[in-house]
Image 1 (cartoon, rainbow, N blue to C red):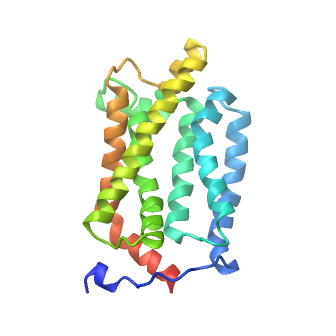
Image 2: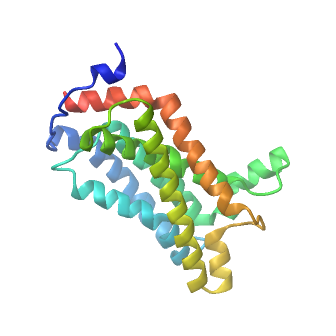
Length: 222
């Protein structure tokens, strides 16, 4: 049966329950010591850590605050967990100096540390499921082309807004701090690459894992 035809109408409201809270609480318990350890031992400095990881922490706080009246699927909570880990690794070293990125650069003869590119791909990949789920459950949109288009558009808009925030933050910081945060590595097209890779991440997420996400949402809705 077509996914759009099988989608429930109207979408039922789902209050948060103890059963649904188990996985998010386990993920939070794993994440908390990682965040504290990296914050207090951060090689790039605590300010850089806060700038890089802060948006992810705000997202986690929003999910926690809205859980009782709008719990997300387990798929979304796992995605948020993984995304915060990606942000934390970049914030700990700075994206331009991550050991994993340096290894990839040296192994494949790249001109720059590519972890920043991975980070912006993740900026589209993981949030795409959050945005899609909100649109599915709070708007008349149903699985199909318009839902995918608007999900990708929102991801791209968030990426563009983040590039503006990076610019403003760099202007407020000292030159060294601003360069660490931006992580352009001499690429004049860095902002454009960041937005493009975010869109690529959202597109891959929906094309490859869209059906799996829909199944997770259906399980939540019962």
